[in-house]
Image 1 (tube, rainbow, N blue to C red):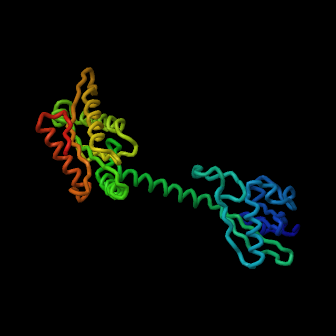
Image 2: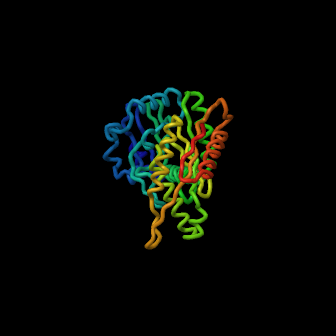
Image 3: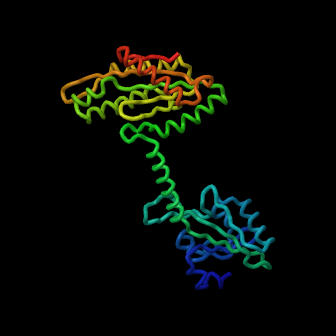
Length: 308
């Protein structure tokens, strides 16, 4: 293969080329690979590729080489899980997303009589980086579309979608779903007295209290203004009532600092449990919890009322 190692096209093409025999011995190694790996052809030709690069799946590569020789046709070689055949440091000027070059690898018959195949390595790092960035952007956009910008709790849209899924699961698995709906007592007075920035501080502080009193499996959402809704999956009405009471007490004991002054605020909360016999959907349960919240407001505020 000496003539190939000195061939201009072989050594100027912008991808890696390896000639392998059926036993995976390297018969030619082009300049692109010399530059990318810092391994000269003279150092690697006639060596087994899997002995030089032990992370290559030898059994899979042998099967693929034999298949190409038998079928006399080219074939794509999967480089999962590493996404590369030969480990080459990524040198993307766009900022590294991947530590190592992402590669596509194709095998084609080269010399059937001598049982040789040609292995092409293409650098597709930029394509993979672009795909990864788009994937990340899509995830961020999805996150933004499901979160309330002020509190970073879920918004009403996400809550509705998730609640419908939870409803189906609860019916299938015979699990309870409970709903807590709450809002801040006299919130308009807080805004009028201290300003909207302090009102926002109250909302954010309340959001953290709600998160601290709920499980990761619960869905805590801001429905708008000072109104919040919590869905507790696989939770009895009695346990939901105790969660609501803990939230009420923690909020009552919390103080908001305004310069040298401190003030506290309270909540009214309504609790209801989804009942497939009377509720056509979770929205019906929320409406019952909302009526309980209204009763809490009307009967003095700073209390938990349960819809029985």
